Length: 209
Image (cartoon, rainbow, N blue to C red; front, side, top):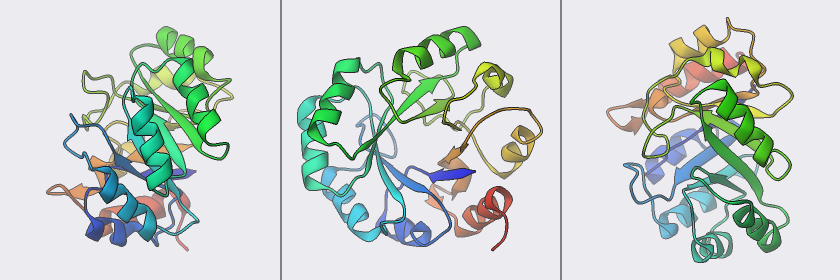
């Protein structure tokens, strides 16, 4: 199972997580998010995070200048698209960089619309994240009905939206084909990343080492 810890805003929090047994760390470059960080901060984060972890920037309907600046000025290895991006945006990223991984986040409105969106994007992206629907494109800390995901098969996707230790235990009882979890609020206490919560989730998902 893959683990992506997301929504890092401070270097001190990045340092708490950078050597843990996780697969990816994410930072949000979307001005309406409470976890927004600027490009200079993202560069600082990507310089700090070791190469064994994906360094993911989260964008919402980005223009090409933003994509250019992030690829040229930071050490990101993945771009996560959280809006209604056209396939042209994905083509642009592919032309700009052959090695950047592209992740598409989708809202879990209902099974039918989810399958339609997966069909639209699945040939051009590397992974999906399925999140709680919201006007601000995620970051709600709220859950949705995970049984919607029973129709999603043979696709690499992470479950997001209010994921914490207890909710992972509930999801594990369902028969879903997810690849892992994307967690932001569930590893925080008072808006700071909590090393104890991070460690507990790692042990639950990956097993103790």
